[in-house]
Image (cartoon, rainbow over all chains, first blue to last red; front, side, top):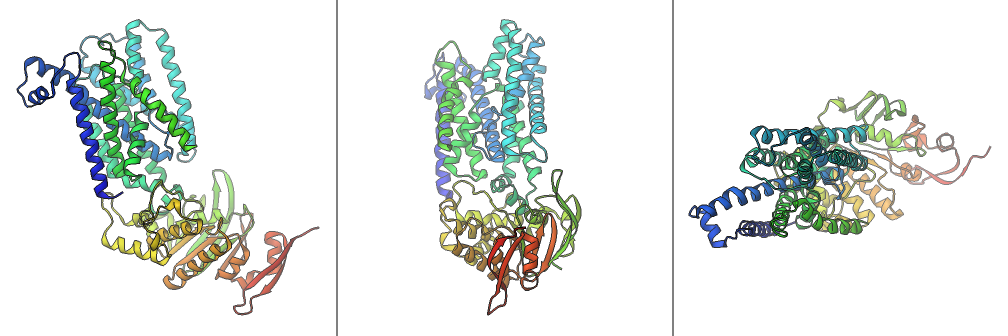
Length: 335
Length: 261
């Protein structure tokens, strides 16, 4: 991939993202024109416009970008370390582990979800989700590794654990009140409902830090693609690197899940599309994956919010509707 | 000095493949490991490469214990070419060869001018320079093998380990690879250690042959010393008919049959 070509494609995708963001700012139960959006952003909007843009739409969009970037990069890493284009955090139990813990917590009796969330909840959720993800990844790791991770076994075990956790979640849902049930449903399908700046302040620095750490070591991911033996031959500590990247991918997916629930397929689509645009070098592919995933999620959220307005469908469902056909296409193509 | 192996015990998980092996692989020579399937020759190579950690015993490279060496320092002294490395999707020849410079790179630094020169040199040496812009997936088996050797060369090591580099290649390409390795040995004084199946290749191209059976070292020495009817009987359980090459004197296996009791 030539530098120029990469720069051009990145620029196109970036302007595409800005376009989607603009649309997301405009469209809704209260329509704002593009000109008014620019005015509002520059600080001369009306009170209503200010509130709509800064308190409702913008946090949601920013959070979508953070969540999508985290999932896109996480999926890209997982596909790299397992050498499998079908790997993604939603499929191998990482999202489910996070969702399970949140569900357990909701079913343990918090009732604040319709009012403003107390600070403890906002701080507690990501921690809880992170613990859940780490535990489920830990379980998969224990079950699938004898000495280091065997990629295929890891994925198969992950799919199994994922199924198990989803079953436990369903079991809890059966014995829940309707309010809890709805809350859990939003969680397991993924939704950006209730986004606010607090979530962003909490997740943005961590996601940026983690993605930075990944990009700093991205060359090691490239080397891993040569196979374990050759990677070790050129001086990579294969088991150590793989575990490290697995942890980074887990943290990223857990952060995303902690604020937006379990959004499936995004971690699959983003990196796969990005790979076709940039080639396999992770230093270029992963940022592109973040960009593509962001476009997809912001776009999907516009649809989720407005298609059946005033009813809102979980954005994860919209992503899945786009994702499933692509997933099948990939399966057929990979033979 | 070369590579010194002392009381090595090698195993996959709990299955012991090599119970106790000690030997010295001479420096600056071409050493070939031969023996029947499952005899432990690949395991021995992988132990030297540190792909499989040694259960017991130690391996010294030029007097230094390889277990104490950081992975990247080892990769600057010893290159490894496994039997079936993976080709990253869509990668070009020169991009693949560039991975040979990985041990010399820092996390964010790109390839320096000196690196580019070495990559070019490595491609030239193996005759793949004219293919540098091609995708590795499109290449033939023989070309691809030369690209992998080129990657190993770009590591600029004194030692090169290869696991069956000629398998899956036709006769002419097998010869081409072996000639190439011999040339590298002569011109760069690279110590070459490889696992090989074809007995005649070993006796023609090796300076030093190590015969292995059931995890034990049966014999070692120059082709002239060790390739004789008695040793082949023990190694492969075959009855061989040998001839001597008129110019260079290495033994050639003309015909062979299974030993029937």
